Image (cartoon, rainbow over all chains, first blue to last red; front, side, top):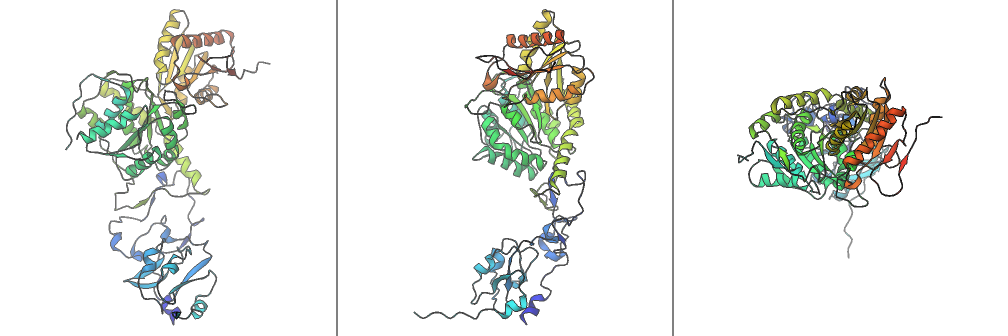
Amino acid sequence: MAVEQQDLKLKANANRGLSQLEGGFDLLGWDEVTQGSVLPSFDGDASNVAFQKAEERSYSGYNSYTATVASWRVLKPVFNIDVCIDCQNCWVWCPDSSILSRDKQMLGIDYDHCKGCEICVEVCPTNPKSLLMFSEYADVGEALASWPEKKKKEKK
Amino acid sequence: MAVEFEVNKREVWDGNYAASQALRQADVDVVVAYPITPSTPIVENYGSYVGNGYIDGEFIMVESEHAAMSGCIGASASGGRVATATSSQGFALMVEVLYQASGMRLPIILNVVNRALAAPLNVRGDHADMYLGRDSGWIQFAAFNAQEAYDLALMAFRVAEHHDVRLPTMIHQDGFITSHTAQNVYPLSNEVAAKFVGVIDPIDDMLDFSKPVTYGAQTEEDWHFEHKAKQHKAIIDSVPVIDAIFAEFKELSGREYKRIESYDMEDADVCVIGLGTTVESARVAAKEMRAEGVKAGVVAIRCFRPFPYEELRTVLENCKSIAVTDRSSPGGAMGAFYNEVAAAMMTSQSRPLVTNYIYGLGGRDISIENLKEIFKEQQANADAGYITTDIQQFTNLRGPKLSFFKTDRS
């Protein structure tokens, strides 16, 4: 059940993770590269982007939104929606904006940008945690099936 | 609204004051500074113009020259007109950030009051700091007196901010000799200067929220080379813009600037090439040599980067022996300036003799007598048809003669 919920529309990824940073672009000649290696984030007028959802924005090919930049991750966080209380702590702390959340509902992880730093796991306050690190190659379903039980308070 | 600062048609200004007045008249938005001798008064004066209401700008004191240039980058990337000043050790600390500024194509103006680099510690003028910046991707102009420090500082904004250029630009003047010697300076009126310099029209400014941009991208072996090549081409291609702005300034002021200046070169057999205050001494020496029957001339490099190879080759074509003067410790090689001139003349039809003199380190004076001696050695070379001395010699140095590298005549 949990796996299905995680796979819902959560990725909002129409334009995300389409390319690899290495060799994903056409390699331009010196006369074609941008002046000062200054890279525009959006195609066209972006005056309104702050009011648009990520999937509605016209990210340019230079923006890492469109690229997969997580190839070197070795451990990945897995999200368990059954335990999560939508406190948004992980969303606040994630240094790569890789926690996907919409209307304060936690949806999942953006695996195209998450580097596996484990901060989200560290700041998660639930018992058991709603985010835990697994091998990059672990099956998410199996990971969720092996989720630990709630820890009982030890009596003194 | 800024208060009007009165300027007379003729003022008695030193090089520092002249440069600071150019910053005021150019209505610089931001100066980020960490003052250092002998360039301190440039930024200090700007600060006082802001404090006294003569400019509507920001003067930001930071903790080091590294931070000063970093602040300039932020202000320039935001779209402002930005300038600062430094010297010597401060310049050295800025070097890392100089490459950032040029790589990001930010039109920052840096007034460099040239001073020797320690050790041993020295506050006097030589060109060690200027040479340290020669591969940094900045345009480099050399002023030989206070008037030129003012004129070039004004023109530098036009060159740097021009959309076909967009490169940071340095204006060099000799520490103390130019920076602290009060001379007659004929400034433009505030109105004329403001009109000449105009208002900056930024590109990719970070305050343009309709087009958010990333500055400071990382590029590895698949992209870096192309970006550096584009930057190099931009420096080479700045030449017509520089020439056009020099011409426009001449119309306005009557003062003519060229990327290389030449004096008495029409029929010269021998010449001295240099830059900075030495040029004026060399011109006096050349006149005296002419009185003694030697056809002596002087060539001065106004634009150190981009280096004027073609113009140099043209002006030196009929010269027989050339003395290139380098005011920086060459560290086990020919002087950098010698190498540039030798590269230009190597490709000429006439292939004149080119020799190298290291002089004036740490502010050591070079006298008219020294320069006449150099002219005489060039005449001896011209008469003999080969370089009669070692190719590189130190001049006006105590102790045994220091020189190296001979022509292979075997």
